[in-house]
Image 1 (spheres, rainbow, N blue to C red):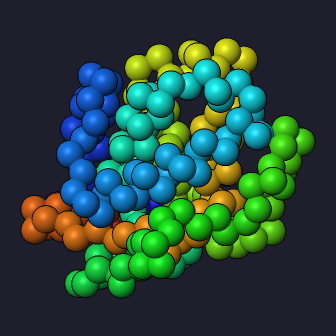
Image 2 (cartoon, one colour):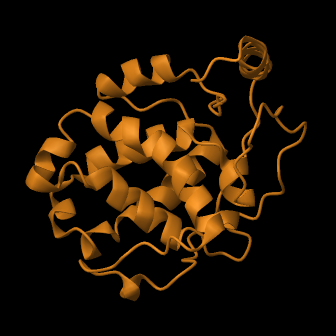
Length: 200
């Protein structure tokens, strides 16, 4: 049985992004978008056609993904296996404490068109799963983004997710503090799912 992981209103953000606009991001969300943007500049090492993506499109993409993603899952590397309530407090923030805002977990020079994602790393797999939950849909919402990649369009979401999971140093991310409405909506959703027994 699957359970909802998203705290955000995905239908609302889909409408906004399809209209070519970025969602509103607070300071933590903006920081996370910058981290994702910096990492995704390394994707051309794996998929050279990615250079066809404009900075404007890439910022729209990372803003939307930063808005949708669950930093707590990416920071801890653990995906809940059932209906789990949100933590009462944000995880500690380490972003930029040493004056460096993007620490690569692994060496970007290892990336090349023949590179393969290290599936044996469980934490990295969990990170990739959470990233794909957000990157997959958003890549189709950003107007015209995938079309710029030609034959690589179908592989692009996977390339972005795998490179990000490989390079992302989780403590570069800032956890989110959700509004009371978002928390209530999320907890109501998982309560309904646990009682309905329906897969999502």
